[in-house]
Amino acid sequence: PRGALSTRDAVALVVVASLGFVLVTTQLGRLCLWLSPVALGIVFWYSLAKRFTTYTQLFLGLALAVAPVGGWLAAGGEGGVEPWLLALATGTWVAGFDIFYACQDLEFDRTQGLNSIPARFGVRRSLSIARWLHLATVAALASVALVTPLGGWYLAGVAGVALLLTYEQSLVRVDDLSRVKQAFDLNGYVGFFYLAATAAAIYVG
Image 1 (tube, one colour):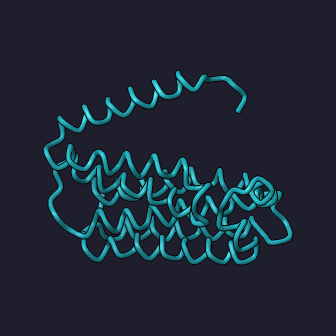
Image 2 (cartoon, rainbow, N blue to C red):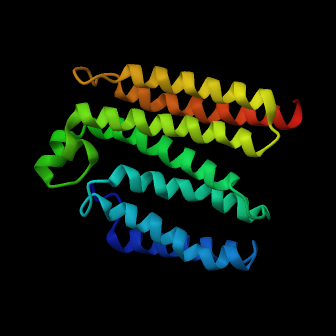
Image 3 (cartoon, rainbow, N blue to C red):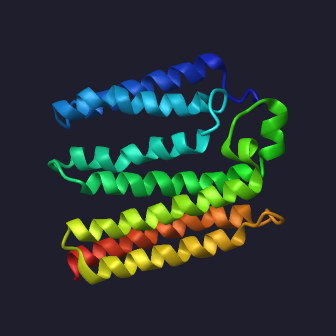
């Protein structure tokens, strides 16, 4: 919108990045190559989702949920439920915190004709949806322990993630959105904490 990048330059950047992505997948096996257009399609659709669907935040979650599945396949992982549980956890986590962030844009989205969960359902119901999504996040992460031998360190990490998400939820209220950015930034700690706990489960526990 600021004109910092021309349309021509933006298109060129997207084309080069997309071709680079597909080229990389040729080195990761035939399945990764075949699925690369699917991943690109999901990412491209998210960029347009606000103009076509209420559930924009869920599409952002989906766009990032493909990452653990793609990583699993790229690393040579065979069939199993593990990457799908991680995808569910990632998607619901991202969608939940993006709903928080979208709450502060509610009036702008409505006046501009843009779609989002808060614009459709209001702040109160949107925060409730975010809570249920984050409950699903914790449930999916905990379920990973049922299908892997990660053990106590991992479960402690899941408990820590649950506490962080609970605190994040407490920062955003129907009548007070002043701490939305603080809640949003907290997600960086969620990711690092989960990574550290999983690494400890693998290399220590």
